[in-house]
Length: 334
Ligand code: SF4
Image 1: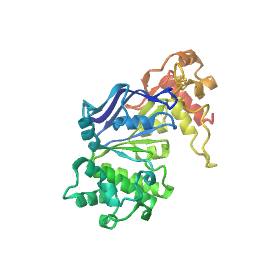
Image 2: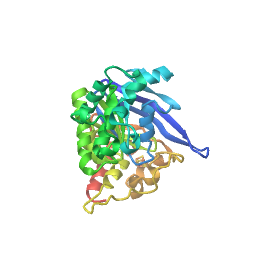
Image 3: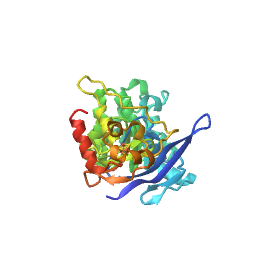
Image 4: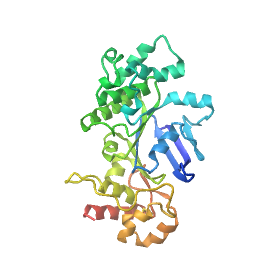
């Protein structure tokens, strides 16, 4: 399928308050096809939020390009303005992103007013967006304030605010992280309905592999600014190839309901290790399973290799065959 939005060799360097720099996104290639939902997964600090912000045009890449409908993003003020109505952000925390002093009508109309001024059909367009976001009948919500809504309804208002300009792409950063478990499913179903009804594409940044499993067609696993594994959701999450993806899956809550800790220190983009950036934490290296490639792991950045499925790729010196051995090891309880 034709990509609607792509990252091509994208690098983003962030400057810290004390003058240091962090390679937050470090050479990412990623495609989002029309009508596709891609989940960007990884621990906090892996670069998924910075990648999402860069794809929205909110961060300027140090190298590489954001490509929308086959053309590099025009970063002039006019180009960015036109782009931002077609690629919309769904904010993470509805409580923080909605102004408590604004009615639902005012919050949802904000994007319209920025891009088009006050228009005669504003109420109709706001009502349509609210209805698409599942707030029905929409007229009942127009004059309400955020404190009069439930958490799920607030998130629907945020989504309506993104839909009002009729975008092609939604970029959602942890869209259900602040919601109760009971409402999460409803919001995820809403994203699936929007894709089915409007043909929307969505890039969803999340640390939640369960969310990725439930809504994404494809998954991209990020570690220290790189996509280390990508492929169809079932290939990546049922048949993972990269030791990092396997470690993330092994860390999911077991019968005791508690997640197992991932090995080693969490990633710090200010200190990217040489060679394979996962090598200081890699269970395959620690267990001796990667002994044959250990020297390369410490010195050489792994290339992206084909793994189990047709779209499945992973960046690991072990390659797909050894990856299978790793899965057998994990199933055996290692
Ligand atoms: Fe582990 Fe080496 Fe693969 Fe990196 S390249 S994930 S260190 S086995």
